[in-house]
Length: 221
Image (cartoon, rainbow, N blue to C red; front, side, top):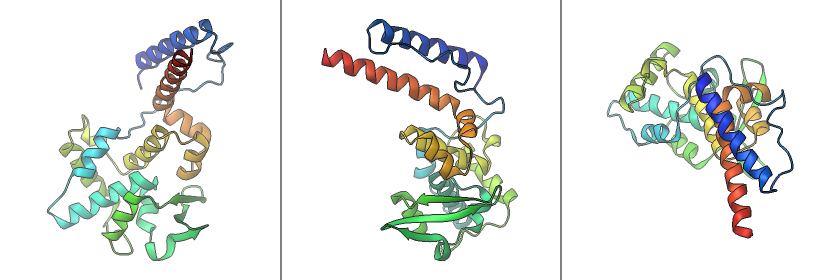
């Protein structure tokens, strides 16, 4: 996110909070605290909801390409990095916890356990593959990722790599209102990393949730 975008979000939020204070919905604002959400200086790329939908609706006649499209979506729905996706074996890693089907793997980067519920869209993918995803290597997979980016009309398809679907998973969870703590646990990241990487979404949620609170109180008065 650019500095100008950050400033615009900051000023928009300031106006909303000022209005909330003026109307008596909140007593004060912690917007100026030094521990507020900071934007990561490194660009973090993920697909937005409409872009992900295009990938879901996409179909390849080429069997290998279609298999790798499913792998891409699997990463989007689980938050698995390329290494975990390749290591995944549905005969070994699907478990039952209190009646809920989950996928449990160890994140290779920091040996952190990742536990992800098997959602309906994940189930559909698992029905269409054997026990494992068959992908030759990361370079080949990245080429397909870029190709997918081109087809869906992503502005910079060359930036779509195997990291993007994992980051997209974080976007999906945060958009659905999942807490930062849970997102960090699922992705095997720290809370601070999630805050940095998804500052744009978190700021967007703050503004949206504040508007909802103001309108709710307006309707009740």
